[in-house]
Image (cartoon, rainbow, N blue to C red; front, top):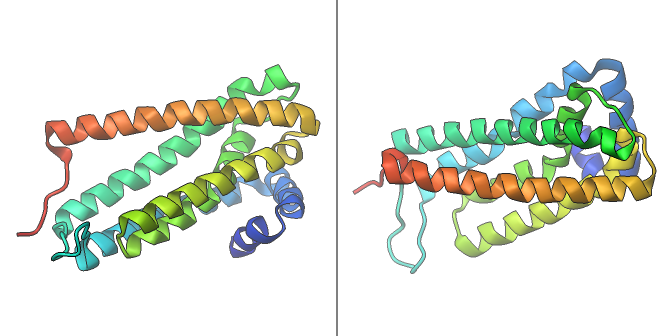
Length: 199
């Protein structure tokens, strides 16, 4: 798994070819990439929110209770897995339009690998800082979109032109999914599932 992370960051074109072969030969083994790496943001947030805390004004940091941080970390872990599976389902649903017919498994694993930079930018939560977090999220999203565009032809077996159009459609679907997740988070906070702060 580690070699794929390094490969996607350093030489993504050739790494997508390796991933393509591995998904074809034994795709079910690589679900661990999603299950393990999706835990990074939640674990980092748990540590950062309970031990370091947020400080927007330079005053005493605000920390969450362990129970609250643990619950929010678990919810974020499940939300990440759900988002990856949903993007995989979007990919499968749109595939025929762009001249390919991949399996559900291939689509979900493609989405799991595309999201690799987003899992890694979750490490920023170890030291909660609004500017650092925003920078990390923007960098992670930018590189994930880059991986999506260059990986599409390799994994879906289509031309780069069709891959570009397919990837653009998925970016739009991803933005809609992001808005839905943000609205769901805001609604959950309103009905009492928000953070509990230490006094």
